[in-house]
Amino acid sequence: MLNQIKGLHHVTSLASSANRNNAFFTNALGLRRVKKTVNFDAPDVYHLYYGDEHGSPGSVMTYFPFPRAAQGTPGVGEVGRTAFVVPVGTSAAWQKRLSDHGASGVTTDTRFGESRVLFNGPDGDAFALVERDDGRTPWTGNGVSEDMAIRGFHSADMRLQDEGGSAELLKFMGYEEIDRSGNVTRFAVPHGNGADAIDIETIPSAGRPRQGAGSVHHIAFAVENRARQLEVREALLDTGYQVTPVIDRDYFWAIYFRTPGGVLFEIATNEPGFDRDEDTAHLGEALRLPSQHEHLRARLERTLEPIT
Image (tube, rainbow, N blue to C red; front, side, top):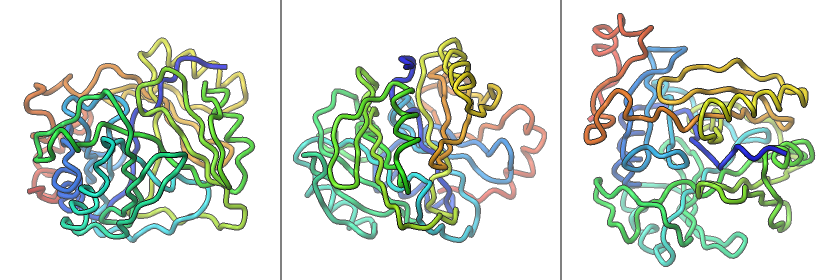
């Protein structure tokens, strides 16, 4: 069993409008845009990152906003809902705030004893705000007060036809089964970074998804550095997983592999961080380009959707 993984690093999804996506995460949710860059493989598309003040691992939601992309169709074999932590007792205030900002599907429930506010993002993406005592420092620069601001991720829900292979994978990655209710099983990594839970929702009769705007593209798990990442990669290869070589993503190094249930996993390093090319006070303000795309700057600054 591995012990290098400390919880979630980031979650990456698809969107249909960069400006609308940015407005929702910075205005409605009060997160900080910590990086404005482009997709390494499709530089005509932004890659936007939102998180806490520093873009700490375990706090960062990222998006590829493909202009006018069709909305995805939910199914099994994907991450169905992403959950953030908010302070205990703030559900009512968040329901009002989300409704005031035009979020759809705002409702509440309880899972494993924790109160949740459920809602949809601008492309139908499913989220939850989970009440929990949490010591992480929130970002308050976008007008959400410290007493209700998001602390970072809580968990991600994986919707699967059969939990068996993915459950075994999570246990191999250092997660432990900590609770079960109905068709939902919760796994958590001990002594993690706060974003340390994964819920598997088993839906045997559901069909496959069609990926589009609002779909989660992949989830990334955090390791401290490249040495720990290489240890994880070697262990996964030895277990029979097809794992990519290490890829430099400028703000972290990444490896990718597909789970038995169909979800794309990434293992990402905490180093070097989002301040490697910008001062912390100005994260996410300027368009940053990977070096291989710097020659496209003039064209991209003309053609990328303006973000206001």
